[in-house]
Length: 160
Image 1 (spheres, rainbow, N blue to C red):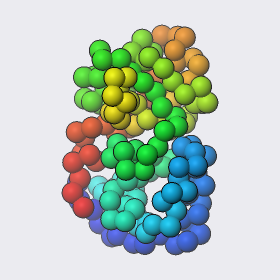
Image 2 (image 1 turned 60 degrees about the horizontal axis):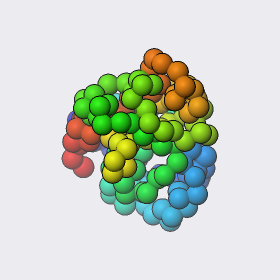
Image 3 (image 1 turned 135 degrees about the vertical axis):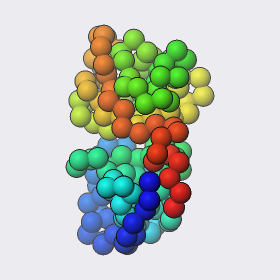
Image 4 (image 1 turned 135 degrees about the horizontal axis):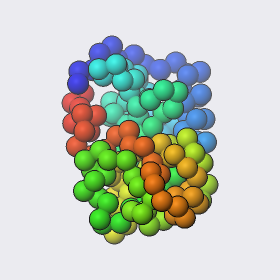
């Protein structure tokens, strides 16, 4: 992946982006509201850099944190924990199935961006889109989360 055309985000667009992130990931977003935001494109994928670090990306109309972004920004909302048996599948880009889920944030709704973490150390493994609500993920079977970014993919290895 190659990064092209880095442009600083206008204040009005930054406010809109921060509101969207706050709705999904809570008040922790306020801690980085004064930092420099830039937008760019990496192989047709819109990305957002905060203080020069790749921390967000956009799929469709939704902004997602990168796995590194979750660590850097300290995001702790919309979390789905998976068991040890699911880890090797998740870090290879597989969608998350209900039987591998240990716990979920009960406020998750279908279509929300979610952070997939492993249960032992709470380390983020992947970012995805919820296919069902948080309560349904623990109660049913089938596919619960569509994976959009994971440790070791092209976005993870992107050099800026």
